[in-house]
Length: 165
Image: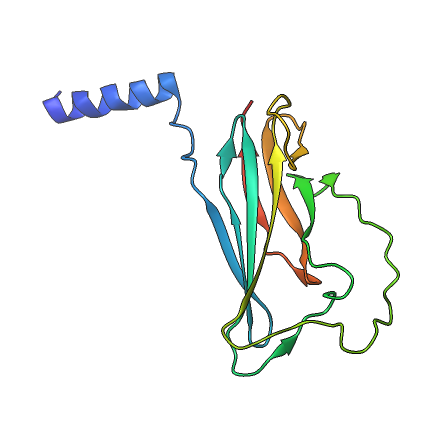
């Protein structure tokens, strides 16, 4: 056997014995065009979390040349989020408040001008004891999950992440 063959065999044995390296923890960023002239960018700060917090940031930007009315802006401007497991079952969802706003008064619907951006955020803690915070406690086991939801009534691009406890 040549030195190259022995080296290849040893490398193969090491990988088989130790397993593949865990996936790198990088931000997850997805962009969509939910309506003409609008771009939504959704960012999770981690693709793989063990402890600490998981932060969702959203940006809805008018990329067009004229103002765009934002549906849902009279009723609610914060993100509505849920988390699904790898089978698509909802395993966590934010309670949605009861709102009566089917017919908002004239002039109260917001619009977004060309080049303007509206932002929103949400966060989850993977363990309690982090002190006073506005984040929701997420008590899910290790696994693969997906964040979904809406912002100004536009769908948030799906963001996948892993919990490794």
